[in-house]
Length: 558
Image (cartoon, rainbow, N blue to C red):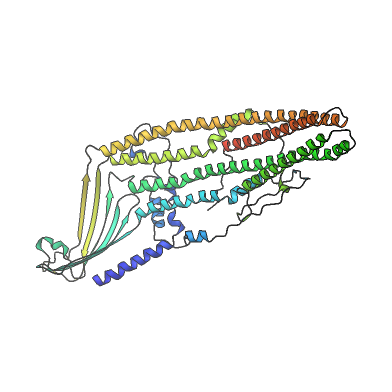
């Protein structure tokens, strides 16, 4: 018998190692009745276990499905193990920096659209992919809890070859935990040798003894126990990764939108720097001619040349800012293979028209944000986990009353003349374990109740913060809209004054210093108008984030 056990246990170890390489997708699933657990709002009074919904209690159909899915894996898909060496071997695609814009650079309305950048974030942003892998982490944690319901193979060999009583005992068996509590067991044992009179039950007939039975909890652990509670918490843990992924997606889209409008604004400021440079360059030949003819003093030409050099430097600075903004945008704007793309100056669009949100829509948007925001969903899932903790604590208050039934039958030739091992044996046992003070259970109930109260207060504040964020984003959007409109008017006034001063200079009624100042005021006004529009569209991105408009499709990353 001992020679049989050794290769059998080796085969079990090899089978376990093979199973570790392949995992069936169906093994990571939880029965539908468990996946649809909904314990409702947090209890204000102690909850009796009888109040736990029927789908958490004894559901025979769910039990049958659970036991089917708890079978040994029917390998259908291999699990790919990613090593750090494989990651280091990947080739990183270095994006090519596009050429600088020429002198006639001008944005167009057919350039890169914001929606393209947002779609790229959805499809291939690396940090979003990293967030999606949290689904596998949560699914693995749930699979671990399912392991508590795995069948267990047990074997033992106990031999006493020396001494007055020489005994040889071998035992193998299987134990299957039940989803509704308790377990079933079956085994085979054989005992040989000269046993002590007080250990005669260890001796079996010639062919050994077969035994089978079950244990059923009648009070504690009947409707919920540590294994089922861990499984249900892990099930909600799988759902809890979704609001975290959505929250990260909202942040990534917001960051990508910021980078996009920074790039557009950098292009608009380059246009301003280019235009003001051309004005100074266009005056150079005319001033040189007037100096040569004696109409202007030579310092006028020198001052204009200085102005050209200074504005050329500012244009170079604007080019550098544009390239830097394009490189930053490439982190969010990617091709179909996920490689960063640095957009060229030919793709820079103009700022779109500014639109104002209807004030009556803000109240509706606040209610919509309360439904969409991932923080609320995350709090709901956490509350359900606390409800499970509360039910488990109430279960610990109950006395443990376990019924055990076992049947045994020896086979083969009798080993004792009395044949006391021959008849069929049936044992019925009742075990009672009653906690008296129950301090562990009462302490857990008090702790969980406090957590539920904390959660309710946190939920109230979270809802208020969400509404405040929506209203704050709307206020910022309105303020930025007004600021941008006023800045546009200021640009018109400054450009009109600059044109008048240039005409006066051409007619000899002004000097280059006044022209330079008027043009500088016009440049500052134009740059402020660009900054105002940039602020408006960033506030628009904040409003989008406050409403949680970005929702990740369920199929993404699965």
